[in-house]
Length: 344
Image (cartoon, rainbow, N blue to C red; front, side, top):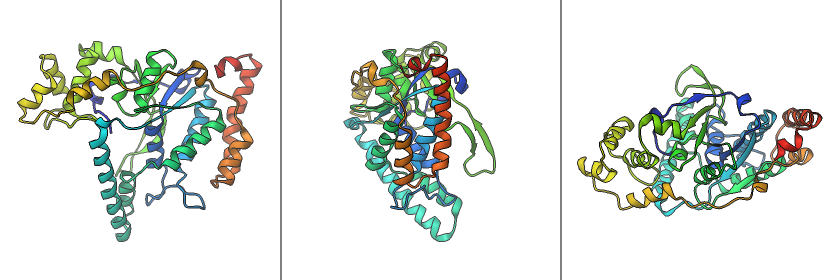
């Protein structure tokens, strides 16, 4: 879910061609959830292979990664590790919410309400262990790095960005900014024409780039104060203060109030984890990564096709067509002596 500070940040629309040659650290779990919720049938049923295993995430990660590679973008997927103890209540809440959505999904199917069924199917989405492992297998065959974070993937991605090992972090969640990502790239996995929920209307979704320093300068605050705003409006580790939105929180913080003071002013008990959450955003659990771990490798074309077509029932022609676009771009780079630079 993440912290909702979208109305405070300035988003700059960017194009894929502007990202060419850039190394991007992608929040893998966030991205996989997007694929699992959007790649579904009219009644909310996800793509599945003959064994009944969900493959929506594989379709998403394969075709989207091929698109990125064909644009000469260098993706690195960063996977979540063990959730921090601070997140225990949020994890429990999400599990209960998914279980309730699953019940409502079955009820909607029973009464033939396909629109409601699709909505509840998305809300009941669960990322299973086998989905994580199969997505990593696809990336391995595509020659794309998959980094295992010790805890929060977006915190690890932000750390890579801070060290200058990647150009930007990519996630839909704004938590990346609280974790200190200098540049946050949104909509990387969902660009294109998208239907508005519950409406017969479509919008064109494009990548959005947010600069942390520009955001802080424009708001006239520090990163510590941005974290304080997050603690007031609600994070994955702390509850929100009822009736206080981002703009109000900004005003209160600029008056010199702390999150604790705002909690008390609104008659709420100060959460015990508040100080720990504040410290975690500033100093999350991350690990060092060698630059060589972030380099692209040659694609195992036949390996990809064999794995996705024979084990997961993908169409070979579609797979080969997507791979050919990437190979053609690599061949072009090879002719212009850019290929080794592209991989590194």
